[in-house]
Length: 333
Image 1 (spheres, helix red, strand yellow):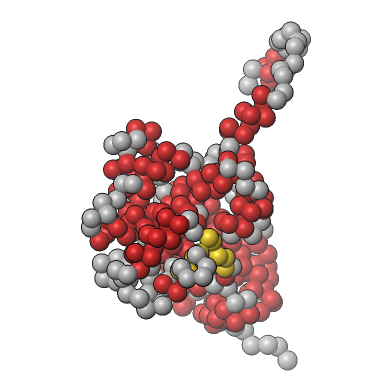
Image 2: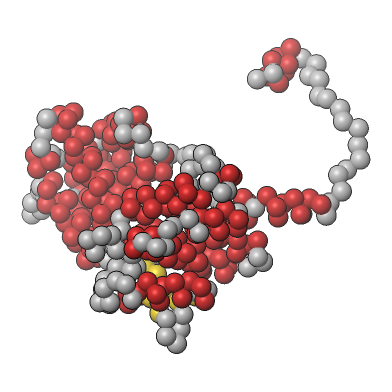
């Protein structure tokens, strides 16, 4: 007996509820990321075909359509290769599920699964010097409620090297100031870690917690309405601090500094202080230690110190001169 055909809306709902939530137990952030990818995809397909999402079939999401959607993300929405790859990963995950749940969809799914991730240049990481960090941390006006919050926010970001999502998700119960002095961070992939605090950071947090709601589930860094600061809110507060800090620290002028720059700065300063890369990986919550090696690659001072230990070879420089016209053409490209 032939199995009944699964409608496209049911397939999508089962993918999110059964596959992602029940079977894989992914985090809420992953569900949100996949949801955003499908909302963008369905809106794109509706503009191209006039079909509402509920009227779509899997054949409407063939490889050519997905490729057009990925081009749309880059050319019209201005997304970079990282975002493009993240959207493609969500679509490919769905197609892999669809090919198992509905074998009739296998040809369509295979063509989409064959679409490769896009490679992109890996720029050298940007980070702040200790003098620049000090200027940023001193910038907020602590005579105001928001200024005191910003000062504690920036100090905690630098101390912990937390991702912006970890900072915005920090609750009162996550700040340990009794026998232990640390913060409990909830990272990517539901991985949790505890990061110790300097005495100064702990003192600032202790004073700040007296000024906000002491409910264990309350956000440590709320906005004026008591809700957690958003990612854009954290970026805005950092931008304000950098603008003030640049007045006394000229090297900050004209630079694009994001919350992730603060995270990079923490990692680089740990590395420059002699902390082992494996410890830095644990500090930052990196699942793959190879991710932490990018900080070693970006540390020019370490490379220069290594170069000083090696003398340059003594030889006479010569220039290669091709003897063939075709080789000369190729050499000139």
